[in-house]
Image 1 (cartoon, rainbow, N blue to C red):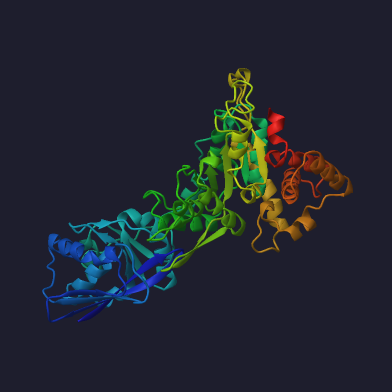
Image 2 (image 1 turned 120 degrees about the horizontal axis):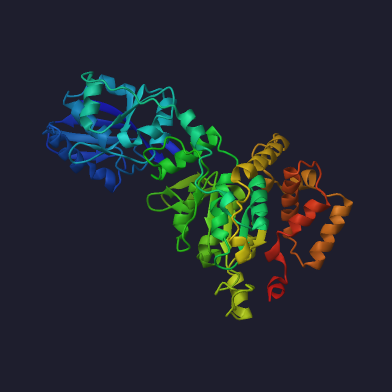
Length: 515
């Protein structure tokens, strides 16, 4: 007897429908074809134990399972449930005709319980797209899958629930969530706030500009000056996620298996802070079983690299192309996968190996050569992609001991949102441009061209401070954002002057000025 059960496999951001064909015939073998990996092949032992421990007998016949399309490699344990149901259907213990209305995924435990899997959300989207009536997913995956409307999503904890529902013996109710209300309620619920940051007004101003224009930023300063504290509060001033952005971000985290079971939609922009020992593959994604890397998990959010010079040089260099293209393509012998990675890149670093170069309260123990080599661990092309470079100094005791709270994140966020709305309107005709940091050279000439007086001042500043040529367009982009924050249509002298002040590391005499 031949039975077909429907499931799906996630490869990159693409969901591939998989038809599981189960045929029973005379014999005693168990055969599986269709390019299964080891995890899929091992499902035979899990299925046999799960059926026996659930009160169902494994058939004493030859079972042949084909995972179609047969030319695409199948990975993971999510096919356990549909294969087990297909085997039972060949023995007429499950209504084979009713199987055509459902798609299902789930890993089986040996006692018949169903274990959560990765990628439930994109699979649910695919099930709705293909017109299935319902989708069976593990109970711990039900909240993410139930986000999809016009699809009955059933969260199951045991294989017997699936059997009883399909046979019509004990019908389950689909999970229905009020995702919008929960989504908007969690958008402004931040644990960290800039009101708790004392002093560092220049740094907070730079972070506001970065948030308003989507600019990449690096902070340089001695240990304890507040670099990490400032960076971790950046999501609290970024514009809120739209529903489409949230859905895309949630899909990535679902594919990576990083979505908490109690979360239906990610409501706040991601903040990823990988350790400096991270490998190149973990940062950009890939692996033998391809998974999104940290840059994709930071999609629509912030990637924060603390102690930037301590990262492997090879890992840092692979960031250059994703920062420009806002997508990463991973090509291997067996696969080619695309992941989105549109993120704000924020980094911090010490000014020297010991960390106290230029600190008025500590003596630096590093030689000029050591300082130069430490700074040069960050390549010029990567530094070229950092629009703002700010210097942070330790706070004096009088500032630390102040009881007065700083400006709250909610107030800063209002200014950021207002500036982003100006940019959305400006770039409405440009499909892939949403903020000032994404402007092309031609767009800089169109939207950020300074007047004659501002251009002359910029020329003098670049000559006097020995700024590199790559700083020119970055200064104009930042100046355009400063003008947007002030509601100015044209870029003026004050905007250019402030933008020039955020190019500290581009200055050829940076080290000499701090001695």
